[in-house]
Image 1 (cartoon, one colour):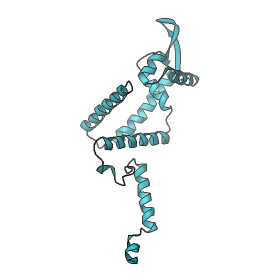
Image 2 (cartoon, rainbow, N blue to C red; image 1 turned 90 degrees about the vertical axis):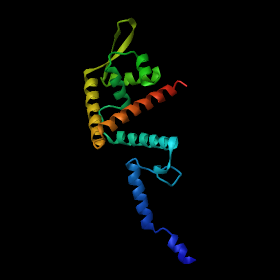
Image 3 (cartoon, one colour; image 1 turned 60 degrees about the vertical axis):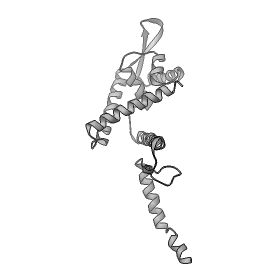
Image 4 (cartoon, rainbow, N blue to C red; image 1 turned 90 degrees about the horizontal axis):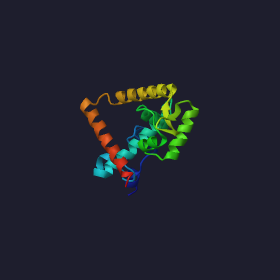
Length: 183
């Protein structure tokens, strides 16, 4: 009986190797399904999708922390919206799925960094519109190019059809999630 116990015991080297493998997998966004003790290949349907989305969000956060981007994510997204032209705080809030007070704080911070400017609203002299500054336009262009280059490299072995399918499904999911905010 004692022989079986010893045979079933995991040696410390094996445990350390498993921990290192799990750490490398987690760093690559390939962590195991929580609590299941199995990889995501055994999960199905919505459970697997939920897990993959949670893992994707975590991986994206990790990538964002490791990159030396010239803009905060919130400022990047706001400047992308401003490519469509001047916008009011209310319009920015709707487009970014935020409340007016959050956008106001972001705009104030961006104005201090000279990323945006406020101009009089030609339709309503009492209000102002937000526009990108030359610095803001330059930095958003630079950041987008870095992100596009990284995606191009990451998806280099994907076919054009697969890349298009990913874009289409990602947009569809994003739109469905935005609609769910209305519920």
